[in-house]
Length: 239
Ligand code: HEM
Image (cartoon, protein in one colour):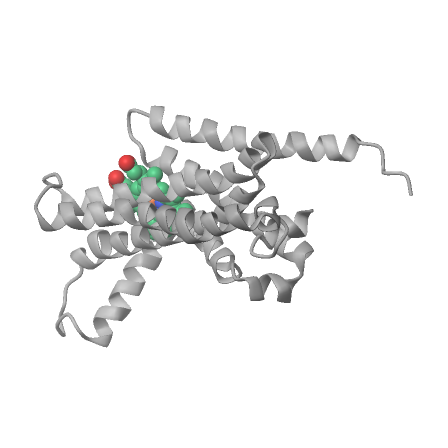
């Protein structure tokens, strides 16, 4: 059933066998969840435009988008345990959306860092729009990734999301095959661990929030280890 799990757009779930709930899921629930997931970004844009952020708005934008990346990673990892524990198979239809929103917020986070932390500190000898600006910006980002370990870890975490987002389509699942696709998408476990480490590393005093996210990620990964061990220990089905 692993391919069914990966290829959740194909008719594997109970909801698809029963057309009414399947229609409710695709026509009503999915658009609601999609719009709700855009809520944090919309709120941030509204708060930035109306001056409702703190005295350091760029830092607020970086921090908020970072936290939402981690939240969407946790939601993505929570879907399989929720499905197994509740028997609500159709919930798997939300996993790709949650993963893509983790990538969306992660990319916003990276871009706000590039603008707020790097671009803002550059000199512009040839003006804003010039090749020298692009070169200096790339150099500044590269050096920072190399020099500051928490940035190295954050960048590595974001980089692992790129192949996951790029292979999230049904066409890519077919092209890679279920087994290889599943193996590749286990990278998300590393993304979540690196995301927590990045958070933990950058917090100077109160580490309660990164510890909380660390505990959530640990519990979600422990569930998978437990299930994998239980599967390995189960007797093979008689032929
Ligand atoms: C999956 C990838 C990532 C996750 C989950 C993540 C998560 C976070 C979180 C939770 C915060 C702290 C928010 C707070 O204090 O309220 C944060 C802050 C930050 N992140 Fe990331 N991040 C990721 C990738 C990146 C990348 C790629 C960069 C830059 C290359 C980056 C640079 C920063 C910076 C500069 C801060 C602010 C640090 C400060 O307050 O001084 N992060 N990130």
